[in-house]
Each structure stands twice: as C-alpha cells, then as structure tokens.
Image 1 (cartoon, one colour):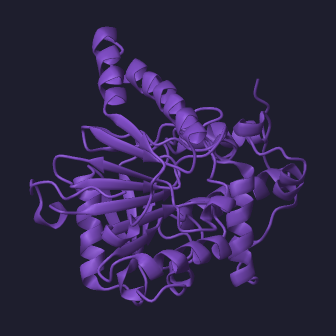
Image 2 (image 1 turned 45 degrees about the horizontal axis):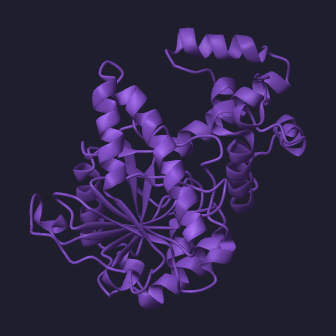
Amino acid sequence: MGLGPLPLRGKPWFGSMRVLLLGRCFTLLPTCSLWNVSADGLVSCLPLSLYQDNSFPVVPVAQSWLSDFLVLGAFSCLGSQTVLMQPAVVLVDQTEDILAKSKKGIEESLRKVAKKKFAENPKAGGEFVEKTLSSIVTSTDAASVVHSTDLVVEAIVENLKVKNELFKRLDKFAAEHTIFASNTSSLQITSIANATTRQDRFAGLHFFNPVPLMKLVEVIKTPMTSQKTLESLVDFSKALGKHPVSCKDTPGFVVNRLLVPYLMEAIRLYERGDASKEDIDTAMKLGAGYPMGPFELLDYVGLDTTKFIIDGWHETDVKNPLYQPSPCLNKLVAENKFGKKTGEGFYKYK
C-alpha cells in the first residue's frame, strides 16, 4: 500500500521523500524531534519469520515537510515494537489480530507520552492522544512499499547475517536512488553495505537512547559512501532536530569507541580490587561530572549489549588491550544478569 507525495513544503530534499524505518520503536512527534517510546512488553525485534517473504509490515506517515514515513518491521504479537507517529498513519501488518494489538500498544504508549509532555495540562494531553488515535487506520496490504521509498533506516537485531539478508532482499525491490542506512551501534557498516549493490548509497545513521533527550546522531561514511549520500543523511538528521556528526567506518564510531573501553576499564579496576564499584561510580560522578557512574551506565545499557560489542571488537583485533574480554562481565551475562532489564547486573533492582 502506498501513499502519493504531498505538496512540497520545507527543505527541497525532503519535498517528496519517503522513509522506511526497520525495527526499533522510532517516534516522530509534531515537533519534528525523533522520539523513542518504549514500555515493558512493547520493545523487542520483529520475529525473523516475518522477513521470509515480501509482505513487509509498513506504516506510511504523512508530515508537513515530508510526503510520507514508511515504517517497516514495527508490529508483531505481544512483546514486539510499537511505532507512534503523527499526523496520518496507516498501520500495515500480516493479520488484523496483530494490528489490533499494535494499536492498543500505541494507545498505551501515547498516554505515557502525553502524561509527561502535558503534565500541567491533562486536558490537552487527552486531546493529543485522541487526535493521534483518530488519524490511525489499519490495513493488511503491504504491497509495493519499498519501490517508492527514498530512505531506508534499519534498526533490527544486532546480527550481521540477519541484516545482510534483509538488505539483500530489499535491494532487489528498492528504487535505484534509494539510500540505505543502518542504526547499528557495533557492526561494521561496510560489511552490511556489501550485501547490496548500492554501496555508494549506504551509510550508518546511529541514534542514541533515550532518543527524546539525546540530540546526537552519528552519520557513518564507508569508503564507498558518496558525498551526496552523506550530505543527504546529515540534512535528514538536522530536519529531525538532531545534531549530526560524521565519522569514518571505524569500530564503535565516535561515542562507543570512547565509551566502551572506558566502561571495560572500570570493570577491570573493580576486578583487580582497586576500588569498589560504588566508589568508582561516585568518583566519576563527583570527579568527572558524569550523570551516571560506569557501573550504573553498564546496567542501564545492558551487560549483554556491552559484552556483544566488546566480543565483536576482540574478534577483529585480538591483540588490542582495549578490546580484551572481562571474566566478571562474562560471568554475569552467563547468569542472565543483564542489568536493569533483568532486575540484576552489577547492582540489584527491585
């Protein structure tokens, strides 16, 4: 199901643009800032079985300065992602049952957004929820959506094989001019791009959580990425109200390349018995002005996520001391103690 382009408003590059978002919960509110609204039971990846044919679940969204947003990989049964957008949304998935559950999840997430956004004006919050819900229609027809898409942003599971299979499939149906981008935080963009025939129109577009608060977007340029593609993604990020920075396709890009070794060194400091995790956290908050200590941050991010990143880097450069695995981290992950999301990591949570 496709929607025709809207009249040109705003920046020329976006006048007739169609964007396809794959995977995690991205939310574009009327302020044109990119939000990530998640709740227990509403955040996970689309079951891989739904990628086995060409009937991708899609959400076209009309904006004043974008013709449509097309959201792919947004809906499944309990435990899947929910995408919330305004002002016009068509939810497309494989069954009416999935769509009903998706719309219910959207309503619950919208009410949480409204409670924060309109804390001093509950009536306006209620009107915001009802207006958004009234703009949502559902359909099980997902034909021909990739053909008319200008930008594909992928944010599915951090698995190179899965990403390659998905992009290889989309590459066959997308228009020649379509730009592909991955939101990966740890995998090499070049390795993903090589699964397609459009390496010059492939780049990284890495957002940060919590998206409503984090202004940064890393735009990653591979050796094959064209300057036009890079500039287009920079402009797109700015249009979302974000602050883009560009970086070559190096492990971890900018932020994680600095952040992950810092977190790992904090673990090693603790492993050696040089200081307690509580004192390390306190030292970095009071001495460096960080809002969270490294162990608090590790638990927030997810110990499994950190282990996945450091293990991947270690495989590519086993002699690099910054990429060495941690016995303490490995033990906690093996015990399924991932941090806040499981109730226990370096700290225990109620």
